[in-house]
Structures are given as C-alpha cells and as structure tokens.
Length: 399
Picture 1 (cartoon, rainbow, N blue to C red):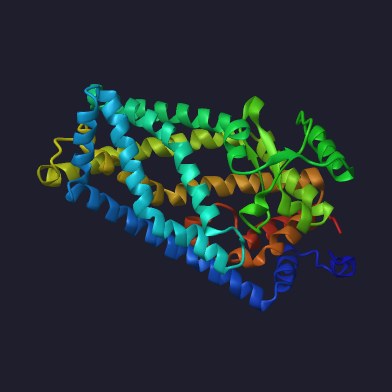
Picture 2 (picture 1 turned 120 degrees about the horizontal axis):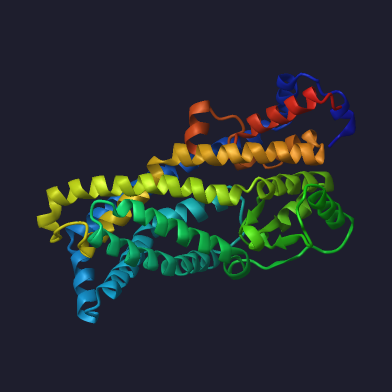
C-alpha cells in the first residue's frame, strides 16, 4: 500500500470505501462484472440440465433399467440400492459434464484465472466424484431402508444419516481427501511463519504449524481456508496468496481464517447445513409423492420406496440446493462477516482487509445490488467488506 495515499484517506467510512473502490481501473472492474455475470448463466444452465437429466432417466426407462440390472446382479436389497445409486450418480455426472465444463473450466480460463489443462481439470472432477460416491452410496442405502421402514418419518432419520456422513467426510478431509488434489506442506520457516504462529497463539489457537497448498495448479486467485474440525482442523494458506500479497495482508488473511477456527464455523456450518438438508428431505418427500402420483405408471415405479425412483429423489434434493441458495449463502455471509471482524481485531489491520478486497477486483462484481448479493453471494460483497473495515477504522480512530 502507498503510505502517502493511505495518509490522505478520509476518516469517514463511506468516503474511505469509495476511495478504495476508485483505485480499481475501469477495465478491471468491467472484467469483474463480466465474469460475475457468467455465474448466472452457469446457475441457470445447471438447473436446466438437472431438470433434463431427471426427465431423461425417468421417461426413457433408464431408471428402471438400472434398477432391473441391480436386481439381476444381486438379490440383496441394500446392494441393489447401492448399485442403482452408483449408476444414477454416474449418469448425473456425465449428463452435467458439459455445463460443469463451462462453469468450472471455460469461464475461469476465459477470465485468465487458471492455466490448468482440460485433461487435468477433468481428472480432478472424476476424482472428486469417485471420492464422494462411497459416502453417497452409504447414505442412499441407509435412507432407502428408512423410507421403507419409516415411510412417514424417514425425513427425520435421514437428517441424522446426513449429519453423520458429513461430519465423517469433513474429519477425513485434511489428512486423507485434500492431499489427493493438492500438495499440502508446512510453510517454510521464517519471520512470516513465526508472526502467523504468534497470532494464532495470541488468540488461543494451539497451532504448531502453518500449512500451504499448491492451489496455483488449479487457480490464479487468492485464498485460504479452514478444513476439518476438532483435532483434525487445519488452517491452510494458498501458495498464490503468499507469492502475490504483502506480508501484512497475508497476516490479515490468516487472522480471518483463525477467526473461522476460533468461532467454530466448520462445526456450526455442519449444523446449519444439516437443518437446511432436513428441509430438503421434506421437499423431496413432498415433490416425489406428487411426481410419482402423476407419472409413476409411465415411469414403471410404484413409489419413492422403489429404488427405480432414485433419480427423482436425487434430482429433487439437488434442486433444493439451488432453491435454498438464499438461506445457505446468507449463513455463509454471516460467518464470513464474523471472521472479518475477528481478523481485523486480531491483526489491527483494517487497511489490510480493504487492500486484499481490491487485489482480485476482476474476480467478481465489487458492488452488486443487495438482491443479487443476498441470493448469489456466499461472501459479503467486496464493497461491504471494505465499508465494515473502514467503519472499524473510524470507530477505533486508526490512521
């Protein structure tokens, strides 16, 4: 940061925020707006593909074909359910691959945010699917057993199954899952590492090390994150963030991530996500009952308990994920705002947060409308994050 520029920065939060945003060149801001707009195309495309996939699998007879194949392979119902689940998830993956290629590869490369080859990207996508499938298959077997045995209350019990599997997945993430995609290693010794460890200890975090991952293999963007919870939790810094930002901003970023850890946001996130999924199971039960009542004879399925209807179950649950975006994003934004405040208080660096917010100014819209932010953003907008930092600066009378 230019010390001469910061010395002239207004003490008024609104004026200071405007001054930071004014530093973003018009062409950079235009690129950010354009890239941000592509997220809406991707979202609409995903919803359309989801609806199309459900229709293709059910009306083509593919769903009952998968069910009948499973019955020929084994007479054990749980194994039949697992086989149908794997086939269905593979079908959803393949049919959604074109829109996912656009959303996760084409638009990112067009914006210049990644140098990853398509083969490598596709390999990561297949690996992600393969890692998730065992968890999904176990969940499907358990939930379908509940649907058959507890037809009126399966949603309640299914919520418990979801919470358990989610907790196990997150516990395994730092040591077993994340290393499949990135090299994660201790940060090199030096003043920066010691400053971060000191910051962690000062805030009650029993940190013995700082971890860095080679996120540059996937993206040019700057980031850090907390993974795992309890004894498996790790605070991980992307290599891009180290190489592209000054030490003061790195310290602010790590203070933000320490905030997530101290405030138990991962564990709270599991609770919030479980509650939203409980509503999702209610939505699935309601929607599947009506769809099967209308189309069940054409589909060749007798009810939701028939695993031939699993594409309907899975598709409606995924659709709920889109419908619940305002809720899930609202929860995530609140946690990010809390971590911002923790990070500023811990680092005493409101200007560091503001600088970091405009460093990736071409990665999205800086100042979206309140409606767009509330529906589509899982972080507060850069403008709002800068304003809160400048308000903190004003209230604490910091230069």
